Length: 333
Image 1 (cartoon, helix red, strand yellow):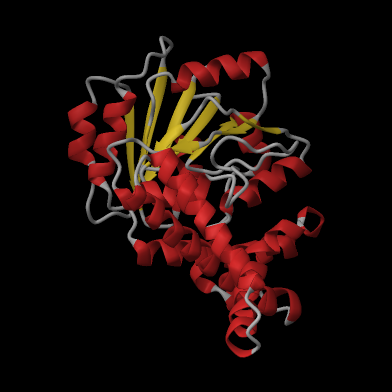
Image 2 (tube, rainbow, N blue to C red; image 1 turned 90 degrees about the vertical axis):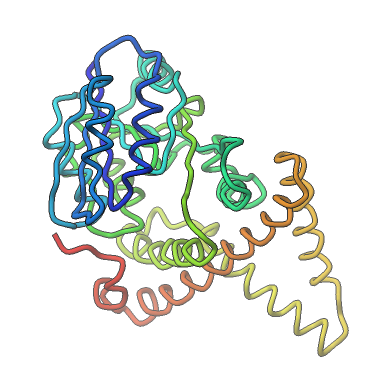
């Protein structure tokens, strides 16, 4: 089986350098190819590719900007492999990654898999805090941390595998972003393909974002979900409403406390955030990261919850067309 590693990049040459350096140290003994798709960048990564070209087989393509989903499709069409592995450019890959994937596919083959993400010790405190918010069982149920206990796992495109057969049957990613990975996953399910979590095939996801960018990102995640629910209503889940309920509940808790002098609900929120602080501080061995994690979780719930509510009103209640209601979520091909 020939693996093709598909990596779209947009104005991130330094990230590509780190990613390629980690790929040069993989312990996988079989041949594989690396396919870099420059998605209309003004800061191109050709110098970084030249730096690593003698270590691995690297193909490089430059194209007009059309978004990460379309760029991944472009790369898969250009590649030689029969199984694609998709990374974001801000990932660092452990040396045993491909070996773990090959072993997992040999033991239990699936046409689409996803893996979790972790944080390196070298990551910044904010990156570690955001990683905690995105992976902890206290926030997302551990979905991205590798502990999801459901039959149908939805891979995320920062660490995702897809067979050529599944790609050709589904035509790959759509033009929504974010949300292109669950959209593809659901279409694969509808076509009869299976997905699976490979818990040992993790990557270090650096997430080079500041607080503002993180808030925008999770807000877009929230906006995308009702759109996906409108497209695929049978896959809608009550848990998708939790961040919105969390935010509304906090507003109610403040009202009860300030106006009616009833503090019980607000105390429950205090207990929850205290637990977040303690668990993160213990896991990261840092009280500072514990504090930053509570900040990251609040931004995560607030951004996602408000985005979800806005989208739910526009898409589900008012029946607006997604491309007209939220043009920022759609790339033009």
